[in-house]
Length: 244
Image 1 (tube, rainbow, N blue to C red):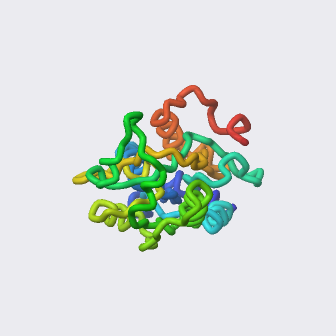
Image 2: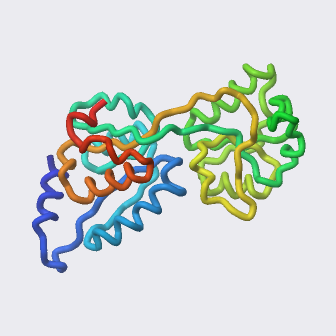
Image 3: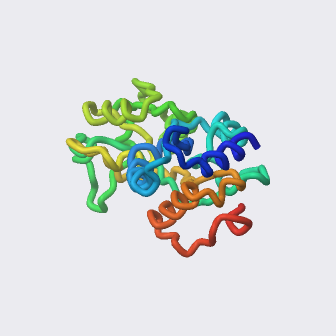
C-alpha cells in the first residue's frame, strides 16, 4: 500500500525540483545481459522523468521484495506459472533453454560427428565451471552428467558473477551450463552452445508484478515492449486474463 501511494504521488508531481519517480526492477541472469538493457534504453527515451533501477534477483528474497514494495517488477524463470499470491500478475514470455556452453574456438568442437553432434562422453575431457548464482546449475551440472555418463564432471571453478563466468569461458577450456540468452552479448570470442544432447529441462520465464501497478504507464509500456520482443503482441492486457 505504501509503494502504491508513493507511485500515485509521483504521478501527480510536475515540478522537477520535487524529484523523479523510480521503477524498481529485479532481473534474473537470462534477463540482465542482453534483453532488459535493450528494452530499458527504449524506456528511458519514452519516460525521461523515470529513474530505472535494475537489480540482480535471488528468487525467494526478490519475491518478498516484490510483495512488500521494494521491487515493482520481477523478471524471473522460477515458478512463473504459479505466483501463489492474488496480488501478483504473472506473464510468461518465453522458455529458457539451458545448454552446455564453451568459447567458439574451444577444442571440443573438433569432435563433432557426421550428424553434427558431439558425443556426451567428450564433456568429461575438460574442466567445468559452475555458475553458482542459482543453485540449480550446480545440481544440474553434477547430477545430469552423472546420470547420463556414470561420472561427475571435473568441476574446477564456482563463480557467482555471470560476467566473470562468461569472461572465464572466453579465456579457458572450461565448459559451463548456462541459459541460452545469457551468452547473446559475448564476442571475441563468442560463447556458444555445445551440440550435445543431455535432455536438460527447459523452464518458462517471464515477468511478475503487483496488480495495482498494472495501469501505471511505465509498467504497461515495459510489458508491451516485452510482448513485442517475444512476438506475443496478441496477448491480452494485464488483468485477470494474465493471471496463471
